[in-house]
Amino acid sequence: MIYIPVLNVRLQPFQENWRLMTPQAQGRHCQALLAAQRQLRSQLLRFFVALVVVCGFGVAKQAALAQTPNKTGSPTKQSPIYTYVEQMPVPKEGSMNKLLNDLQQNTHYPEGATQSGKVYVSFIVNSLGKVGNVKIQKGLEPLLDAEAARVVSSLADFTPGRQNGRSVDVALTVPVAFDKSAK
Image 1 (cartoon, rainbow, N blue to C red):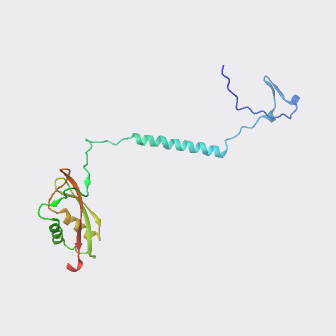
Image 2 (cartoon, one colour):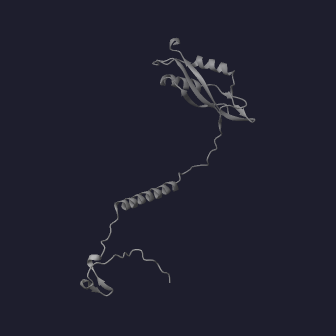
């Protein structure tokens, strides 16, 4: 037999007259000595509420993590984009200096633009030598930024950059100058 200690019994000194108590089968009973049922303290109640809330969030998080998005097809492996490689990409028709001159000649100052300066445009020359992913890195105003992106997007093909003997994607950045006085 296993003895389990009784933890919910409190013994207190007794000051009442034994004879005035109500006799019971288990002994005598005094209504005055029955301890009032203790209510949960407010701190303990707050703790239990917080515990339920935290457990609820944990269950909700696990349910959210268990949901997986529907994937169609096999995942595509993206090749890294380099900023500097053994053999940098060059325009098929000339050099980088010729490319910058062609950019300036093909750039038109848009109507309604008010500023002068340079717009820095980044783009990626992919492993096939095509220009793509044109982004404005530092712009002046929306009209000039759009014109710079248009001019860079229309660039001719490049000889792709090479790293370890194979063609790779390379990111380049070029300045496109706008002069309001040369309009």
